[in-house]
Length: 303
Ligand SMILES: C[S@@+](CC[C@H](N)C(=O)[O-])C[C@H]1O[C@@H](n2cnc3c(N)ncnc32)[C@H](O)[C@@H]1O
Image 1 (tube, rainbow, N blue to C red):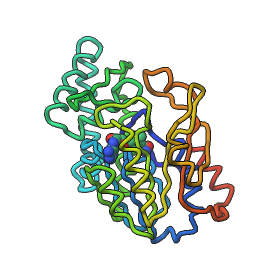
Image 2: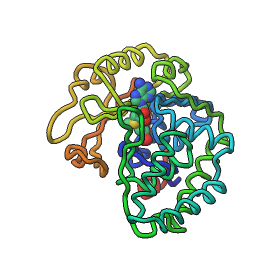
Image 3: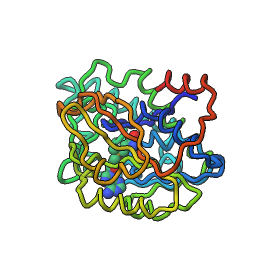
């Protein structure tokens, strides 16, 4: 199955890791058709949207804009049709605007920071520099414009609208709850028959308003995962060429760990533009993979 891409972007998006995560999920030995999905750090949603599970989905994030977008997709307030009308309209104003669109981008940014419309959120995410998502200390959108001729070309708008339609299709086929809350409250909802997938902000790396992450948070996460009756899979960083993640030894090496090199393209910080060894930490033994090889190859091809 090709990987479903969400309509918003972020520098920490796990698109490329989806086949690897799904491979581990398939080795839990659980009955995936009835298994629940708990995701306390939902982000763009790419992992949850692609999880091969048939049970309920309870997902949370402290960023209200992400959760609002998915709630609006779920209740139909945002759909492929009204997103197309919106992007065509805004794209044409951007095209005709002075200063190569910079001034209009700033206008949409100011409007979003006041009104928090999910449409403006998608617009900013898709017109901002390098597909980055960052909020300043006041919780305001803080990414500069990425100038490109014909920024919202018809093919680009169609691509975004298809992403909205695909997200909507996945959500409407399952039972989903999108909650704007701290990870502790989401983890508490997990039962023994669920899988919790966690992708917290990486400790010791760059953070923004919604991505603050302290040693206390990491300790609380460890405690919550130690006590959960559910199967969990945690994404974290293992090391890069500059340093190691101290939290691996402090907490995560007590569980099972597999690693893979990953290259993040986004981000202004030099460290974020180098390869990083990613880890998946999990609290169960792997059962033999039952996925046909062709399916795995297809997953990787579309990542
Ligand atoms: C690394 S990102 C998740 C990326 C996601 N897996 C993806 O592929 O798009 C971490 C997310 O955790 C959220 N977050 C940060 N602190 C949180 C907390 N205390 N509780 C819940 N969510 C939090 C951030 O808003 C951000 O969306």
